[in-house]
Image (cartoon, rainbow, N blue to C red; front, side):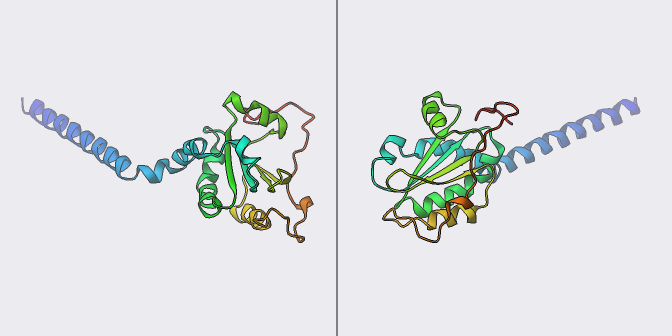
Length: 181
């Protein structure tokens, strides 16, 4: 009889501890959701806040074009850095974000030979490609490239296009922007 009483108390204590643990985890997630989910939120907002590519290439401003996917871990990791660049330069430069999973952007994916994401292309005000970055990049490297563009659209003489990464044709197997390879 006494054994059942001790067992019942332990059972109640275990249930209370489990409930408390679940409550603490839930409250932590609610209070710190921005910290845990900020990159995903920023990435999802890119498409909504993006300048239409047709307008960007015709409005006589330099253009920052990023191809991304919401499932891409590198894209999520770079999202806060890209967001900082956008906030700093959006008055002088178009920021265009194209989700490779959206088929309406297939024309641009083909046109710019996207074979890995994230892919960032930087254009002058005439729409001429100045640089391409594929994969995880340092914010300072991208910032340097942006700062080399005169807001009037002229390329500073000290920039060397050969310093930028180029898309290399993969002859082993075909990779699409939607693949993980």
